[in-house]
Image (spheres, rainbow, N blue to C red):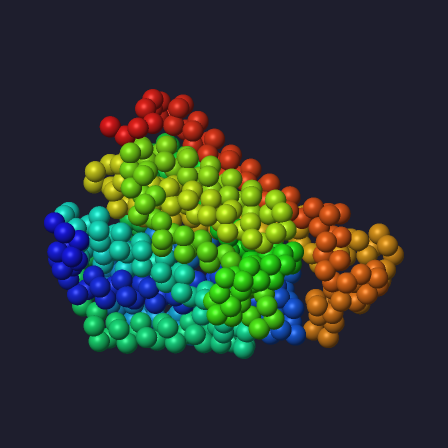
Length: 485
């Protein structure tokens, strides 16, 4: 059957669900791609000036909760109906995003983002379930391919809009997210039709009790439990794309090199991608990952089809780790295009295979249960990623921390960072006190303290994960062939 014929087989609910997925990912990644910068940026720019540890607590703990809750919210959607749950989720998201832009203290921002996480957790399982219920055995492969494509399109568009809007005001980023979700609410009210589903007549108490029983059931499968624990390492490495990389670029990398290189080819494109100051914002560079996935996912997927899922995973995670290790072997930001491509190739090869592998090893009558449990290592990975991006990054790579160490060595005393004496004030005063320009100060700290060593830590976690999966395969599963038969 031709692709055009397959596309005609999908009902309206399939396309409506995917449209809502696109807008929700647009809103979420529009905020999430710049969140690390917003939380830690200098206050006179409209950012909050939090420490790296405060940032990591907010991002790590809240996103861990976000990925843990769908284990429960999926059951709620099955009981009360997809449309009803979405009618709850969307107002929560609208209010949550608005509050994130209005709150300025650590506690209130944490709570506002947690409110967003609850809304996102209510939303998350519904769209994938709708896709599953509106596809058949003959068109499911194409259907989920479209769904994965849509996810990445939304994840690509959101940061572009956010990057431009934050140049005017950080509040606009959160207002954008709220408006996008409001559009989703209108789509839900006007176009969404509940897909056919089996109604769950059990009480809420029984449903929650069954969820915990199912978790215990899965945990007793020690091979699957070990697999999930190992995967925490992969996700902890992967999420540094959002937790750490934007901060690292912002603190250490001169992106005017990229701007000038693009301007030499197309001044118009450079003006659209960059800022009036002639720089490329960090989120625009990290967003290359989503662009690569949109462009090459089908090609990579067709290549790794010949390999067993577990071996494709091992290879993909190892390639991801190499990409992370190469992110900053040099301060030259042009090298990011290559290193992020390597990272993206590994992601495209390994990440989708996780779902295929789980689908194969799960008992026939427990596939959905096992698939749902895959949120657990993602939650654990976010929590671990936050720890790494907090204390570890602070000690090894945070520019302010390393500068404070250097100033103590030199006996230079400066006022503490505050709303009146911001991070940028601190950097400018320190450079002046050390008789350097800001650029010279950055290079001095780079050569003295080697902040890029943080990527060795993240690479080691990725390589360690790949090795553990290999041992898992050889010792627990005792598989011999790397090619799927």
